[in-house]
Image (cartoon, rainbow, N blue to C red; front, side, top):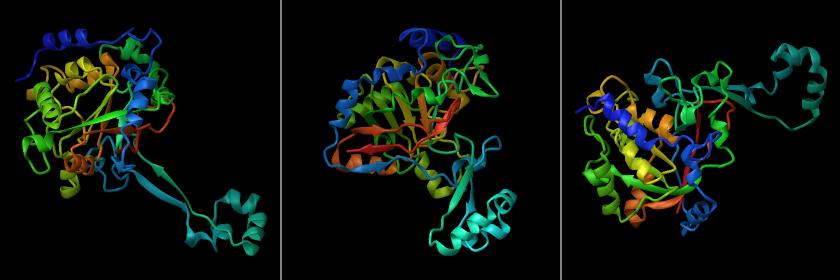
Length: 332
């Protein structure tokens, strides 16, 4: 059953962190990641095992299902086939300005090179939402004006603002798939509730503490790899999990689905869309990680019974961006 806007506003008042770390703060709950927390996370490394949590950035990604975001377009600008024709058929500036120099260089020098470029939405795959990504009532996190995000980018709360913090901490996997006893997928209409998160943590023998990054395995990405259907809905966190994250002082939350939260409007808040995004990003200052590949990590944690690890997940430092790609790793 959907909640009311009154319910939403009551929760927003309860989780809002504006001013908690000063009026100029632009990193929100990442402030919970103290030097002591980083050292604690490093101490979790026992085997030297590295597990990638990032999906591929390519033409077969999940964003091909959506019109306002497309999959990455990868283009080779120079490749091995160009070596003999670089000067003759290259760009005009190359032919006119430096043709003789380049030609002479390649005649007597064995060196050759390949080069490429990529064009893509910054949230086309495994990524972090910056705190400037979502707002309501003309305010971003910490009271910054929504007008501070312009066609030039985000003046406040851009993804580059978290670079100094680095986003490395103790990660905790909460495996909803294993808890529910399903193979690869949590069906739509079955949101993950705060009480269920508690049950999963207890079942796994792990606690979520201040400064931890919560990683939620719903099975959506495994399903996507099997079907290629990036538009297929799946369950996610119920919007009231924002209060759970606030209570546990989580530094961030990430999941293997497309929105982290449950997209079913019948399970959300009447009169709005993605209420957990609003509560986390705008009120709490808590970043969301989406499209993480968690199947291998879930399998490893089930095998050794260890659901905590060092998580390293700094985003690409794109100045003024409201989200950015990441290639996170878990180290055990």
